[in-house]
Image (cartoon, rainbow, N blue to C red):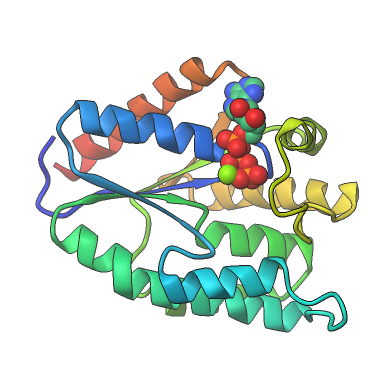
Length: 216
Ligand SMILES: Nc1ncnc2c1ncn2[C@@H]1O[C@H](COP(=O)(O)OP(=O)(O)OP(=O)(O)O)[C@@H](O)[C@H]1O
Ligand SMILES: [Mg+2]
């Protein structure tokens, strides 16, 4: 599968769904198939955007971060990331695997924090420019299971603010991802995150192959 333009694949879903695990497995699959790919993440992905990530996730305790500020920082991070890293890579024919992208903004800030969804859609498109994912994998599982997986993991920087939200918030976020998939069934595919990693990986490879068939 050699395409002129790289494939843009994003991994979405709640905390602990296995996004990073599956992204790394797909990276290995691409590399073993001699396909160039880069792996990146949001928020972050460039030195400047990583600073936005730090601000939004672990800002000073004394000063609360407002929902509006949080939304705009995510958008700023994305605007930088897309233009500096993702778009140039895709133009060179490099495939891009991204750990979270604008559907996380819709799910967390829109469905979770209840910021106007139409506004988020416009902001997402503005920040993303021409970089619309060819395929988005939503790894789906009940929030309790995902958070349990994350709590088993070694804590490096302390839990971030989004991880500490109430369970009702995490349910709205999960529901948000499922709504996005319902609205854009061509691009967004839901895969159960409860199966063993290898099984999920095989499903994802099939979805990637389907997209390549369609584009070719
Ligand atoms: N299919 C799976 N079944 C059981 N455990 C899994 C599965 N996939 C990943 N895990 C484990 O769950 C934990 C979370 O996985 P991972 O870090 O890939 O999730 P994530 O979606 O990237 O999380 P975060 O939202 O915090 O970045 C890890 O300890 C990982 O080994
Ligand atoms: Mg991760």
